[in-house]
Length: 633
Image (cartoon, rainbow, N blue to C red; front, side, top):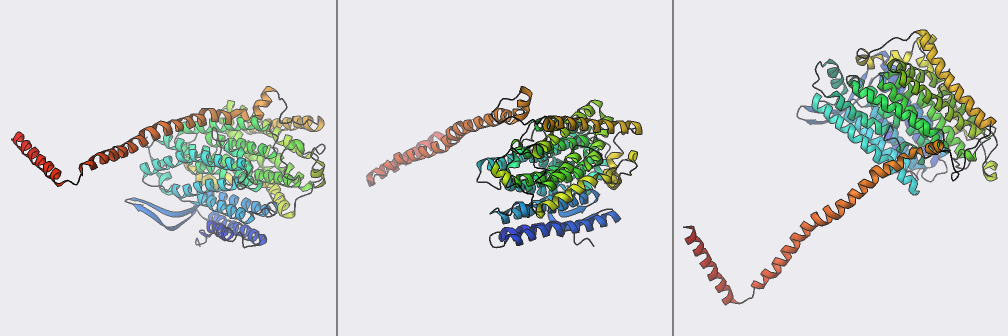
C-alpha cells in the first residue's frame, strides 16, 4: 500500500530531467504539460497519502540503507505523518497552480524549458525536505531548495542586478545552513541517531540536563533564520523579487520560506525543552514582523510590498512558535500559502498587463480593465489583513490569542503590526486599481486581462483564501478546530509541558474585536489617503519626510551590513592576500626555491672535470673522516 510514496518526489524529478534535457527540442506546449502533470500527479498521490494517514498513524518507507558508520546507521527513508502530509498537499497543490500560471506568464520567454525544469526540481527538493524521516534527508532538501532559489532568482542572469540578488540569497542562506548542520551534528553526537523516531521520544523521556537543548535548538533556529528570512538575515528575500513572478510566489508562499517554520514544528519537543530558545524565537519573530511592516508601508514596487509582507507574516509565524502556539503557527503557514500565492500571482497579472511595470506610482485605475485580477487580489488583501471570515483572520487571531496569554506587551505590538499590515496591503490595492491610470499611453493601450492559464489559478486561490480558515474555526465561534485535532499527535509531547491558561469566551471575543477594529481603522485610513485624497507617493529623487525616508530606504540595513560586515571582510581578505599569502606563504615557498637554485648554482662549480681535483677532494674527505673518528674516541 505504501509503495507509491516514493513516486511523490520522484515524479517532479522526472519532469526536471525530461524538460531539462529536452528544453531545446520539445515544444513549449509539451514542456508545460510535462511540468504541470508531474506536480499534479504528485498532488493526487499526496491526497491518497492524506487519506491513508487519516485512517492510521503514519507511513514509514525505507527506500534504501544510505550508509553505516559503526553503530550509526542512516537510511534514506520517508515519514508521512499528519504534519508532513499537510505540507505535501500545500507544496504540490499550490505548486501545481503556480506551474499552470507559469505556462501563460513565461510563454514568450526563450528559457521556457529551463524554467520549468528548475520549478520541477524545486518541488522535488521541497518534498524531500518535508518527507524525510531524519535530519540528514531534511538537510538534502534544505540545501536543494537553496540551490534552486539561486537558479530561479537569477534566472535572467544577464542582468547583473538579478545575478547579484541570486548570489545574495545563496550566501545568506549558507550562513543559516552552517548553524543548522552543526545543530544536526550535535543531535547525532548526543542521541547517536538522526532519525526523528529515535530522537524525539528519547528527548521527551530524559529527566536530566545531559543534552544541551538550548545550544542545539539555537543552532537549528539559526538555520531557520536564514531559510525563513528573519532578522538579521532577511534582506535576501526582498531582493529575490529579481526572479520571475511565479518564482516569487513559489518561494514566498508554498515552499522555501516556510521550511524553517516546518523544521521547528517538526522538532517541537526539542524547542519546548529549551524555554530560553523559545523566548529568542518569539523576540526575533516579533522584531522581524515589526521591522518588515514598517518598511512595507512606504515601498512603491508592488512586488517589494508583498516581499516585506512575507517577511512580516513569517515573523508572525515565529512569534507563534516562540510562545508555544505550534498549531497556530502552522495554521498560518497554510492560510498564508493561499493568500500570498494569490497576491503574488495577482501582482504578476498586473505586471503582465502593464508591460512589465512594477512601480505602483505608474499604475492606477486598473480595476475596470483587470476585473478578475482585481476581485481576486481584493480577496487576498482582505485575507492577509485578518478580516473575517476569510482565512487570515482565523490563523492570525489564534497566534495573537496565544501571544496575549504569554505577554501583554508582545500582544499590543502584534496588534499594531497587524494594523500596519492592513494599511500597506490596502495601500497597494488602492494605488494599483483605483484612481486614474498613471502610466504611459502605450501601456494604457495594451491593458488587458490575463489569459485563462493565469486567471484560473487566481480564482482557485481566491476561493481557498476565503474558505481555508474554516479548518481552524475556534470553539468560541461554534467550530471544532479540525486542524488542532489533526495535529494533536504531532505536538502532544510539547502540549503536556507547556503552560496553558484558558481564555474566557468574553476575552476571546474582545481580542478578536480589537484585531478586527485595528485592521478596519487602517483600511479606512488608507482609503481616505489614497482614494479620496488621491495621494501618490513622491518620485524616486524627491525628498521625503525623515521617518518615511527611513522606511523607504529600508532603515539602511543593507548599507549597515555593507559597512559593518562586507567592508571589514574585504579589508581582512586584502590583508591576508598581501601579508599572509604573498609575504608569508609565497615568501617561504619561493624563498626555499631560490635557496635551492642558488645553492645548486654554486655547488655545480665544484664539478670541474679535473681528475686531479677529484682525487684531492677525496683525500680531504678521508682525512676529515679520520679526524672525526679520532676526536670521537
